Length: 211
Image (cartoon, rainbow, N blue to C red; front, side, top):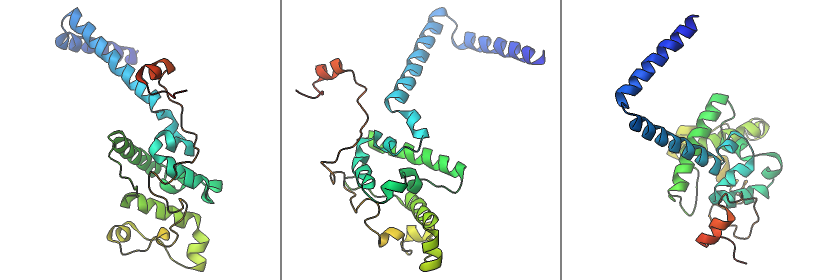
């Protein structure tokens, strides 16, 4: 009963507020139209960008952006391609909250840069990503790093200052074969996602495959 009373009071104040800001039927209709357009754009952009796929650990998700093609191709043909996925190296694995925070933050940064075409011809990991990669190198190769060579773990401060030696300072070809240029694998075949643009529209725009 108390919950129903709260709902009733909430509705009352909601409609009062709407009548203050949208006093006429025309104003309400325009607001509903804009809300519909906004929701439609959000749904379409989520579908077009395959936003749902980023909840997974599937490596194919990374080539939703064609820019990541060379990195996918070199990973796929490396020894790491048999036993790891992209997130095993590039996302924190020690804490689920840190993992999803980093994944969201780093993914948003990538999306913004790639959408605005602000990427460099040669892509390198930023210091924050380097820390995560180094942690995962040590995590996967714990025995090697603690019993055989005892390298320990290089932290964020050492990486940012350049004082520490990361694993890839020596193992430069792991796992991307030393290829960091966007044009390094021009003939590789990759499972890029199919275009969502209808065939008739591609034909009108002249962007479809010419036969």
